[in-house]
Length: 166
Image (cartoon, rainbow, N blue to C red; front, side):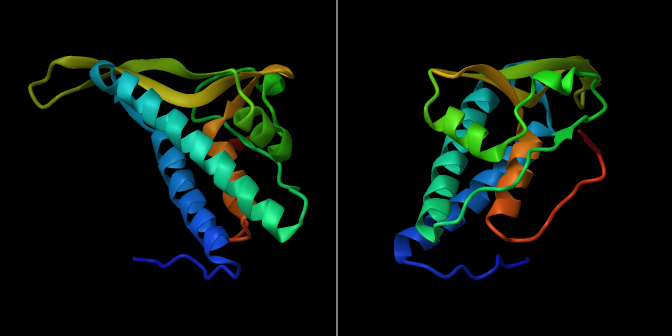
């Protein structure tokens, strides 16, 4: 098991760093998973919890360090055609929209059926994006791209997955 990099700072900042890293990992993983009908509701709830946790803890770490967020959110295509022109790409804007949201709605993209062990088809849903409504309007955020931008902002390492579309 790979250990995460050491983070220098007060105890609360260290805690926030660790929580942000865990939330980013869960968010990235959940956004690239095909969820069956009977789990998609629970997956949406967990995804929202992780998104809020990641935004709050990342903001805490960045504010304590007195640095400005400069990372951009890359949109991952995941083989699903979407119009990325309406997607938020500025990490600071996305974090603030999440922190000050009125509504968070994960977007379920229905995928071809997959089969259970008994060969019965189960509809699958990809939760790759979220629609965020705040006082500043409504925008979409690509969840895997958001998770990667947050990890990059935390200074862990620069990550650019192969399946990126801007």
